[in-house]
Image (cartoon, rainbow, N blue to C red; front, top):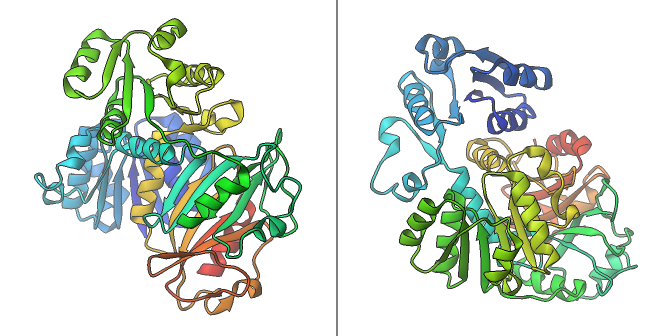
Amino acid sequence: MKIIIAGAGEVGFHLAKLLSYESQEIVLIDNNRESLKYAENHLDIRIIHGNALSLSLLNDAGVKNSDLFIAVTSEESLNITLSALAKQLGCKRTIARISNIEFISSKDKVSFKDIGVDELISPEDLAANEIQQLLDQSAFFNNRKFDDGALTLIGTTLEAEAAFIGKTVKEAASVFQDIHFMPIAIQRKGTQFSIIPRGDSVFEEGDDVFFITLEEGVEEIYKLTGKVKTPIKNVMILGGGKIAFNTARKLSENKIKVSLIEQNKEKAIELADKLSDVMVINGDGRNLELLEEENLNSMDAFISVTGNSETNIMSCLMASSKNINKTIALVENMDYFKLSHSIGIDNLINKKLLAANTIFRYIRRGEVVDITTLNNLDVEILEFIVKNTSKVANLKVKDIDFPRTAIIGGVIKEGKGIIALGDYIILPDDRVVVCCLPEAVEKVESLFS
């Protein structure tokens, strides 16, 4: 499969990295030599320096014979134009990154396919959706749904009251007659090392544990961990950009009381006009006195989505010091994304990473249909569709030559989630969710190829 990516920023680089795992033929185009040089030094891809709007450059990239063109530059209008050009020049499919959420919500009124853009991706809309998902299970972090919730990924820190501290995975699971969840990754307190748990792995206080669970398994995990399910009723949002606006709108539609703080007076007035059910406050959200005056202490969640990563991190740390149950910070720098809640913030989100992973899911036509990463862990979550020719097809889970640094979290069969234990037989068309360390990815992919 030949794929051309216009834009070598963080989204384009991450996409190229994901696709390079499959030995796809990838061409990366950008005006910035430094970005291209970094990509060339780290990835096995072809790079082209220049303006992607050049027809001769697009022809040199082989757009006529390409299977997919992805425009992820920082300019929305350029991405749409490039995608339309690529389609007219012969590319089979196109995807454009946009920032205007109206384009996505108005798909029934405006057909972008008619001008050559097959898919639109909005990082801002994806970030707002991610925030909403994280608030749905406020006691946990890394809430991630597979196939509309057939399986769910959640993470939690084990406190002293957790019922299975000091117990093995097998002993903890025996508390329930039927297994509705599976631990897939553990990070010990104070370390940067990820553990793929086995039956004899012991849970320790302070562990960050990630589970794949069925819907009914969520309640079981609440009981085992001693977490309390607290409904989110009051939320404070710092920032007045597109992510803040979309998040506030969605939360208020769900009858959640939202206070939004924006420093720019004109923007605050504009937001107040558009968000009639949201309390919009004009002020500096870095001012603790202001936050306390606006009832910070009574909030169930604090979300900081300004354009400054450091402001978002520091304001969330400030909110955490006031015992706010849930804090979410938007970060632009991918390096910050690795910090996660270990610094006192429940969740860090990166809209570029969300966009890259979403585009990746759109374009995969092989066995892997989904991929995601966990905050602060060097593990990957892969979702495979089993083919008739896959090495795992028609085998029991316990009979598969699976690497020790990988684990099957669950299976989705005909839209229904299953926690697949040792005697479960993997069949063609099953969708299998696997957690693995980086060194096991190649081996795991070979089993499903």
